[in-house]
Image (tube, rainbow, N blue to C red):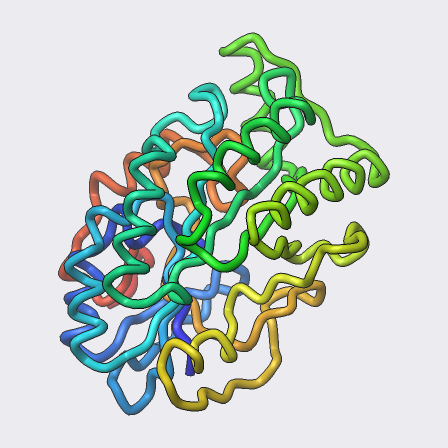
Length: 296
């Protein structure tokens, strides 16, 4: 079983102690965000094939990586680095700090462990296509030799995403839009060319209808990459959490509406204020990242 921690929230940045407590306990309890069912997910060495960690700030989690490594459990790090303006990314760390973290991960655990994510791509008056091309080129130059691929995707305009983007746009005085597919593909082709010039294959996550020549399919939960990192074969069914996704099956131990980074376009947060309150009230000794009401 591959454990995802977590595409629902940033466990490495904000919930490292909870993760270590659950690792010591050998299990975590999770709540299905759609049906409310409670599950117990084993975190013992004989049950876990590997971890996929997702973050925008690895610094609070560096000790936890050493613990996981010390237990001979392979892991992959999906690290989002975009360098967006503060109106879009309210509280993420500077790209230079994040890239320093990725370099340290490559030196400590091997170059295949870290994966750079430049996603989601947001079209706005602050980040038009020309801005993305220039920004992406700068980041590629800094990433060269540190990671072996870059994953991109375009912002999904879910109802909550559109609502939060509208609030941020009014507050900061910018405009944003969701362009047609051909404009996204034109930018994607430009980014693929830039990435290729820096020796980085570009992969597209979960949007196969937009793929163009030179762009591969992202497999963020990737048993093959975990196998290379581990040095032994890791098998898992190809049962992604979305039909358009190229991932292997995994169990996620995070919770929505719990990341206080404050990214305006986030699909996992309904209310930034509510997410901040949940983080402040978090109990790292709980079996759940956030326990359901009226339940033991």
